[in-house]
Length: 204
Image (tube, rainbow, N blue to C red):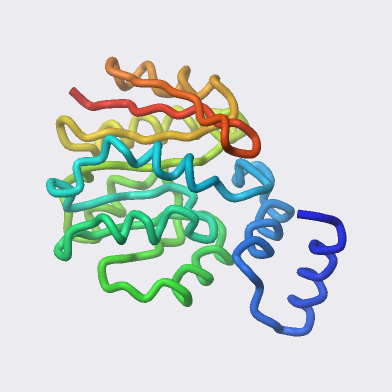
């Protein structure tokens, strides 16, 4: 995003005009740079590769941490079964308000909260476990201990043969996954800005 577009986004916000997804994402990055991993939403190629291993027919609950403006949301909803549920968890109230306003699907719930509380959030929505958890949270810049807790709670909430799908710009995220998951697949997506590390951590 250019300086002129960011200025336009700020002026639009002051006038009360609805922000575009890119403008919302950019504003979220400026307000919460530690919690938003990138200044630019993920590419379509990254989305397709990240979701490639998901067994949609056997997915009843899909959870996402840090959905931002919903870059993955419509793709996930397009693949989900009619009776499945999608819970998106974000600590940024602006993103949650945006998602609740713009995604009108009875299978979708946007929750203002922490990924570290995923077990309770899943339980509150009537489930014992999740089939898949997707995350773009920047683990390496989270406050001390938070990334470790998120890794542990995610392993706890996943069903057997479920997976934690993680896309990052730093390979350090492997240090948070390895203590909880002993079956981790890895790939790179170069057609993304910046190029991203992709991990699929399976609960066996």
